[in-house]
Length: 286
Ligand code: NAP
View 1 (cartoon, rainbow, N blue to C red):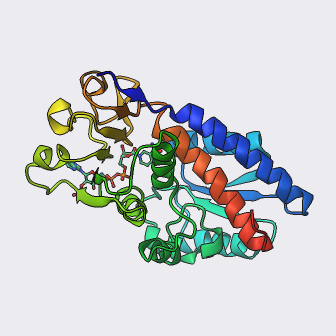
View 2 (spheres, rainbow, N blue to C red; view 1 turned 90 degrees about the vertical axis):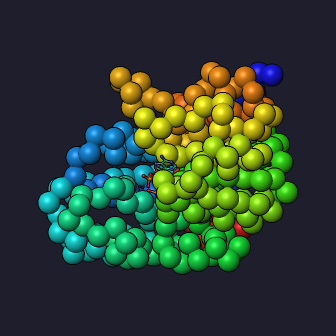
């Protein structure tokens, strides 16, 4: 068996086209979708991610701007900026690029966001909605994983889905999304014992470990299953995921590449969340 490669670039391009149409629809009604991002400090990886997000906004006609604060900015200065963006009627989406410098409090910062502008879906109101099955603004990476599975018609309902990650950004929200779609969900993490025995049972295996020394090879996966690799590791200047792509792709049915799998979907979902926030703000159904 040779797996079908789930092409995140291709699906993301389709999503962008849809978003473009919706942007025009909103503009006809006098709404100009607008995303504001906030970067504190000069982390090169964060700068790269933000550049990709702003470029994507430009491609689909979403206005975007970045607010760059110095790395030694105090918490109250960051919160004052968030307050200003919360109250700016032109701004529909606010994204605070994480991680923040160590002296700043991530939870307090996220709590400060207007939940209706929280396009990363991390505010407790949005987390609560997702956990109770309502799904307001949902974190972009897990939303992108689900969209990719749906595009390739991977059966979620009734499947055994295992996620190796329990972060607020990836594992927890993805577990809720899959549970809301009737999967039987297992979450694994660094304290999980006999990981391979658990992952080998999965019809859908999602990994987001992000430690280059931990490799997910064929002995961790079920034959004929679907594997999604969220991780981004930089090894010798190259991007690599958790999964040993070549040997695993010989035994599974669907697999994502790194790069070109989940990454582009994350950016595409941010665009979707921004127009969702713009529509909420204007009281328009898309
Ligand atoms: P994180 O908070 O560090 O989460 C890593 C998870 O892996 C944790 O739950 C950790 O368990 C678990 N883990 C670590 N070592 C393990 C082991 N030996 N066996 C099993 N589980 C283990 O990182 P994150 O922010 O969620 O990101 C994870 C990865 O996804 C990173 O590579 C990141 O770059 C990537 N990512 C990609 C995208 C994208 O768009 N493609 C978006 C977001 C993140 P504990 O909880 O016990 O520590």
